Amino acid sequence: MNSPVSSAAAGEDEGEGSHAASALPLGLGMGQRQGVGQGAGRGMGLVPRLLLFATLFVPFCWVISAAAPLMTYTTALALFGLPHVWAELGYVEGRFGPRLARRLVIGWSIFLSAIILVRVLAWTGLLEWKTGAPMELLLVGAMVVIILPELWAKGLAQTAAGLVAGGAFVMGAAIVPSFMLVCLAVAHNATPVGFLAERLRGRDRLLAMAWCVGVFA
Image (cartoon, rainbow, N blue to C red; front, side, top):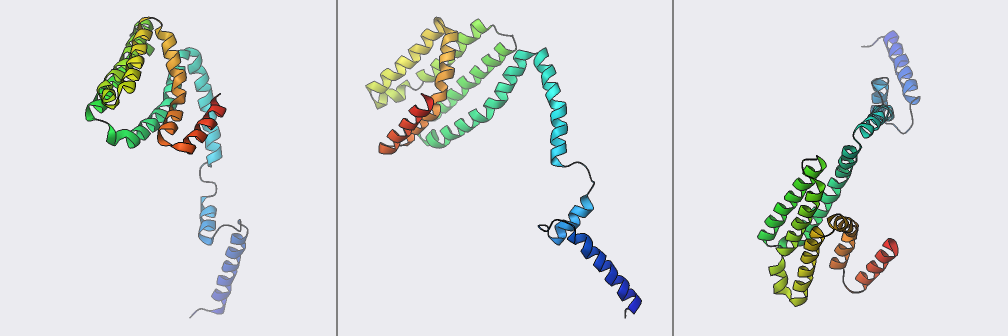
């Protein structure tokens, strides 16, 4: 049985605890308020950590950019491009995967891996750009050539389009490889437009293409 003195002391403690808890933000529950009280002063918050990271990382980027500008640019471009390429390949696999022959998937994977290898060798200086650019274009042309049997089965117009595309890559590799690569880089921005045109039908396609013309023109 508790004595009056101990009961009074307990009441004072509860009153002080209630007063301390009421001083915390009203949106916090009792458990959260206790966590805030216990965690106060432990380590840094998110904003100070981000500021510290930026304070250290930005000067580091300045030094690296001055010491190796080309490597810094290509690395940053690759880090930005990887999620972009991953998302596009994921869409292509989900949308067209069931319709693609296994030999096409294997062939394209080999050619894409070869293109990446050529680009890395050119970036690192192990392969001269005047050699790497034509090789890259020829590999892209090979990716077009291997689908010619499928295009032939669909009709003469599709086959002619495939031959023109493959021939353009071969001629570009032989005559103006750098200009051809620039054209490919610009034309690549229209890839989402092609996805929309393939997926939509009728009035929805016309409306989407009109919006694309308004945005990209």
